Length: 153
Image (cartoon, rainbow, N blue to C red; front, side, top):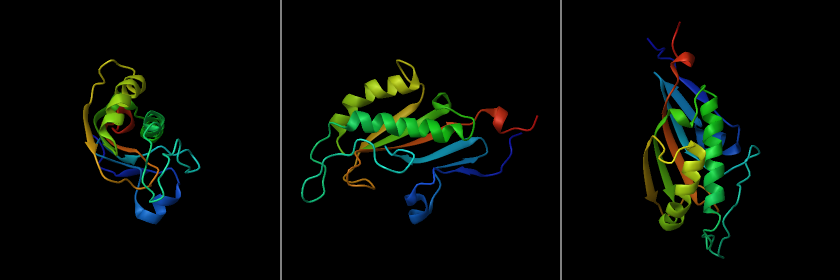
């Protein structure tokens, strides 16, 4: 029987404290990963989109690079629970440009999951804005934690 204890993980980036949330929470063998984005360990956005004078993205060519870093951050936070992308059962991609995201997603997802057809449910949803103006994508994940890290022996 798995433990019902809630565990959390964070990166220590400024917006965790400012907004007040954890990057991931594990409860009863399920890992809920908050929306990941393309920041580095210092909290700097990787491949930020170029903005117009009103602060809206005008170029979506960095979608693939942002997506790749977003998945890399998910790998890092899942590892805090002894999990990997192999344990992901569902993901939701929130994007500013569906066409740019769909074009990049095939390459990036196959690369990151290491499979021609990743074994997880996936949703790709177009939105009007994300947390940071230069941000083009945010991805949430649900994973089943490996039992070795959850269950008493």
